[in-house]
Image (cartoon, rainbow, N blue to C red; front, side):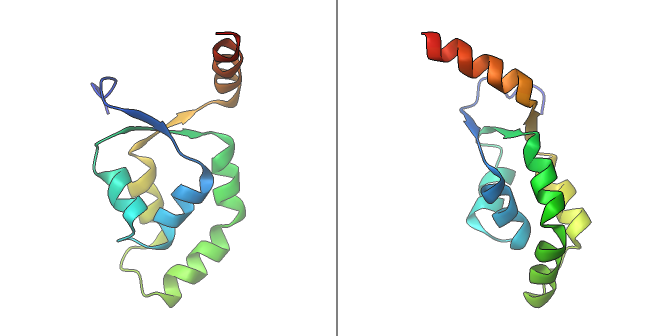
Length: 98
């Protein structure tokens, strides 16, 4: 992901990532993998994904998704930058002062 700082940057929430994990060919999955954006994801979202992992796996099995959950998770998360909450809070506070 080096050299992606000049691309448009977006922050996605857990719902976007879970949507991409539920369906391999979803619009969200394609956008994340497209490398059109530098995508940031808050670190607390990893806990949310863990919380819903069994639900996501069950949905993937029902929809006969070709990739195993663990592979899909790696496949999606390798394209996002994890933003640590303390960093995000500091940036937010700084921008609110502007």
